[in-house]
Length: 294
Image (cartoon, rainbow, N blue to C red; front, side, top):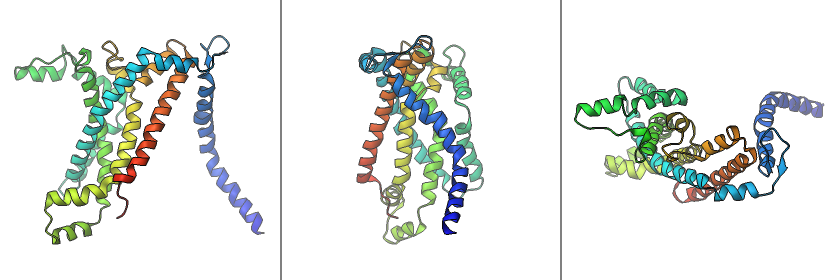
């Protein structure tokens, strides 16, 4: 009787999990394993695949465009990550106050997050247009001649970074705001009794107890940074002269424009290894600065 109940319970559990497991298997695990196999072949979708061993990986690691895209991603992350964390923390602290209409402010800060990247990129491409863009028009009112933002070698990547921070800041703010609201008031009461001021409470109480949320944001933002694609494709197309090209864009171009499926698959697995390695390093380093004891 007990065995029959356990069997019935297992059937119910499997029944609920099966749709999700089927989707995971069909649309993630099987494509991942297929791409791993394809990465060792030379295949153009039209002719039979030819096994070439690790040649695609060797070529990818020596390819100038691949190396340039990795350099661009590093430049993007170095500009994006500190900015989105700093502004996200600032807005989280401001939105954690008990003010009239605070819920409305929280909605406003989150609106860009739920907006399509394609729509956002099209709007910002117009705003940053060097000839008729609104930003350059506003700058001209105060006597400043703005650059051709998205076609300028210096300003193209900072423009991508600025737009990315603008769109993602709401997500970071919400995560950090949730972390702030999870901190007990008892810590601040004890700090006040000990004579700690506002700045001391922030750096000695708030930041240490907020490190789990900061760590989560750091991991997610780094992963997203390595997969930079949508805004680059729409706003700059990787230009000017490859200054904003990324590895995901290279993968997309090689796979669906040049039909070099094996080479593109090898690039995707190189990107996977990089993201995996960076995540493992973060997991190890978190032991030194993340405080979980509350």
